[in-house]
Image (tube, rainbow, N blue to C red; front, side, top):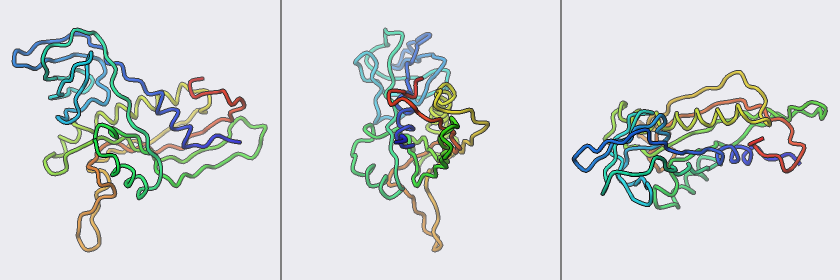
Length: 236
């Protein structure tokens, strides 16, 4: 039986790996410390999502995308690298996913998230002699917490959009390296400030998720090759 697309996408999301390599660290003299690095990944300046480094909790004060982060805490980190938690994966219809997210109370237990919108469209190749198994029309959202009431457009970019684009770029990189994914010529990335917010015919503002999120949408026709060995993984 063919492996379901939602599970294949999950495998790729789980391959996302975030090792923050500190190239240098500066004590700013006011209880904050600036950590320089070539990649800042999905780290956001959020007071209610602490960053744990070597067992110590820090508050991220600001992020200079793929340059540095400034943190506040009891002491300057002495390690040269640490792991950043992976994003959570959700898939389903808007209604079901919104319900699932609403049942998870702590923000740090569900965000940032990668959301695969269903219903999926899988175009299968019925010729078993051809390596290509299917082409899947995917809408995948990389989303992070945002502040609808206080953030201006620039704040969404520095606080969420750029971080989620980092996630999307790494996801594409993993697809390009996988042997079960055939070559694809293009894909679309769409910035989603105030994700899911819309105005009804009566002029009322609504949003499709209860959560306040911003990020980026990836639209891609993903060519998936046949998996002949059940032990094959996305890493191959």
